[in-house]
Length: 238
Image (cartoon, rainbow, N blue to C red):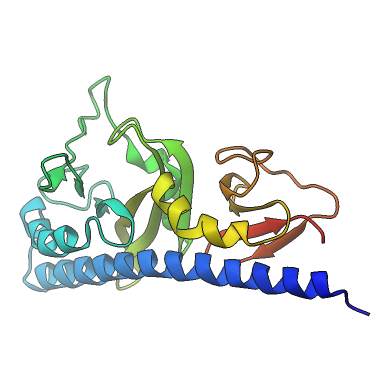
């Protein structure tokens, strides 16, 4: 016989999983827009007989500006594969929120000869898509480059006729993501938390497993990979 508490727990766990997937799908939906527009512009430039340049990526800005601040997003843009652009070996078309209310462009040091050179290819949000991951969620981590906020970065690969040309990505403050999904996790009777593909806790309803800690497995806990989202919902047994 299945206890009523088990049925109730299963229901609330499914509801929490559905809520997390819905929020994540909205954000990845925005990245798909950026990916499609970037690929379309790259194709048009290629078909015109020249190489893509930084000025061509300015055409992404109306879309980036419209999506900035929507669906939890605090920063968004396209990160070019090294050597893709004719006039910039390394480049990010990246925009973020600012206190003024106007989008602010991130301008890191992209000179390989500089001691402050920002080699973005080493970050998981770039390396994952470059290695073939369709969807990547990196973090939580303190974003010292952009905002000094505890953040997540979501990313997808951008390809042109099967060739990797860069990454479409978005930053999300952990506090915003928590506000969107934590109420659903709190409905689960017992410890429950989300982990990314590296086992790092993203959001939790218990102080025992705080955001940023690493979960390596606990006997009896249930791990539910979420559909089409690189997150898992971990919960204690009923």
